[in-house]
Length: 247
Ligand code: IPE
Ligand code: IPE
Ligand code: MG
View 1 (cartoon, protein in one colour):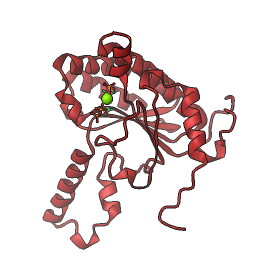
View 2 (cartoon, protein in one colour):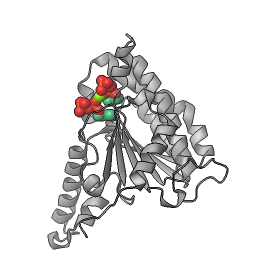
View 3 (spheres, protein in one colour):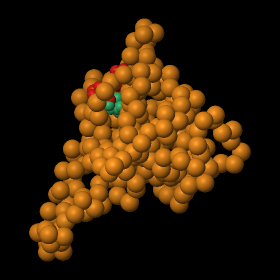
View 4 (cartoon, protein in one colour):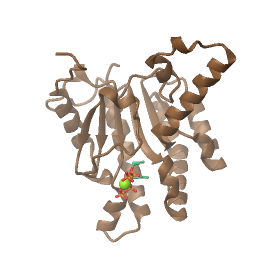
């Protein structure tokens, strides 16, 4: 994807080798708030600011797909008040930012169990997706009530149903068949997965798609993560030698 010609090229970043798909596990909001003796929700609010910054930074340099892990299937088990606050923040983001996403030619796509969201949030999400569906400069995947095991299980169910109905022969099932039944069907796999807050795990994120992803685990808490640091992570990524099993 062509990048914005007006932008200042960050020193050292090769605009001809921008990863097509970058994914972020946005972690550390709670600890950011705790350090300041604030309620965890304040951390999520601050984290929402970082979301805006990273979305625009990605758009500026021509990333094709940005996937942000905002709420996992396991996060439903958090205290009711926190879940409520997160849903409220999500709704506010969708409501206030759709116009800007539309103007910047960004297509918003929710990945996850959208049917589990409260009705008002789901409707807002459907509106935002419809309003941006023709946009083509970048896809912003927001992973909400997302879990890779659920995603793969759903794919297996759909594939099994096709076999049962006779429209698919089991010997024609390939890894592409599986990819085509995931939320990310048709998109490139993530080249780079960034996790903030010094946690070194995937937490049920993009397990199938991450087969050959590069990882960047960084100590910064998500609310403190900046565009400059994001570009630095990309510069480091550009130094890596991705071999894909070859020599
Ligand atoms: C990430 O921050 C946001 C969500 C998982 C919704 P956390 O809320 O997990 O923050 P920590 O890990 O407790 O610091
Ligand atoms: C992963 O963070 C999910 C999101 C960032 C949305 P968690 O904070 O929920 O993950 P664990 O519990 O530390 O593995
Ligand atoms: Mg966390």
